[in-house]
Amino acid sequence: MPEPTALDSAPSGPVDAFQAERRYLGSIAYRLLGSVADAEDVLQEAWLRWQSADRSGIAEPRAYLTTVVTRLCYDQLGSARARREAYYGEWLPEPLLTTEDSPAELAEVGEAVSVAMLAVMEQLTPAERAAFVLHDVFAVGFEEIASALDRSPEAARQLASRARRRVRDGGRHSTVDPAEHRQVVSAFIDAATGGDLMTLMEVLDPEVVWHADGGGIVRAARRPLAGAIHVGRLVRKLSERSVDPDRPLVPALVNGETGAVWHSAPGVVGGVMAFTVENRRITSAYVMVNPEKLTHLSGA
Image (cartoon, one colour):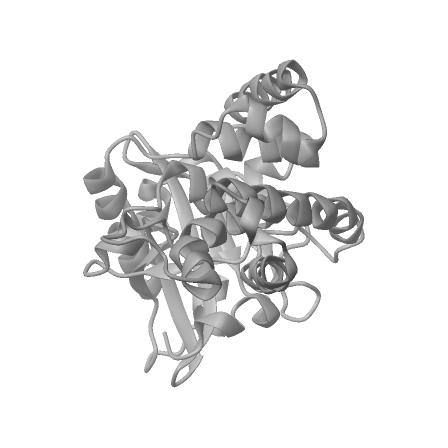
């Protein structure tokens, strides 16, 4: 989602004031919900509430709108947890595709919005996730967080601290060296495209874990698959079955990190892959093939 931008002049009206913060609010909503569609719905509802609010008493629009968006997301997260528990197979966040020449987009992506990080944050309670995202990612103060969550500042601080520990303990979710990450993913794509199992084994960590989300619509592993030999064989089958030679697996920036994408038809994304890398090997792969989670990428 978009990141906040510096403005050269103050907003001149309610529309300008909301639009000035839209990128920032969208960034919060996407990180809290892991869904582009849900984040957009939240922004639409926030806009309606902003229109009907008595703005004469609002001294800081950003703080007010942050509270509105946080509360809307918090309400959605409660019902979303129930839906995701009943989801067919493993639930993964909707991916974002960015480009090298989009500095505004690249400025806002990073560890806290990587697919792996968003997947780890699924383990948090709604309150923990909100406190963690607001404080650790957007540097929102605990007084403001407390107001948004209807908690005390000390309780908000404890939520963020607990979430931080759970995220840290939830598994490796980033690559230290982007250049190394890019090289390893490129080697993976070459090996997967060539169907060379031995070469695939060289770029997969022995304990690599494969996560896939087909939503019961597209065939995908229902549970995480572990082990290089199992993942290597699965990748080879996937390449043979799903990737068209005329529309091959190609590198792409997925949530700000080098991943891969393939198309099922011209302009129609068939699947997106994100990875974590350590010691020049892939330690985790996240594969999103549920078409309902890829519609926002049409034309990419």
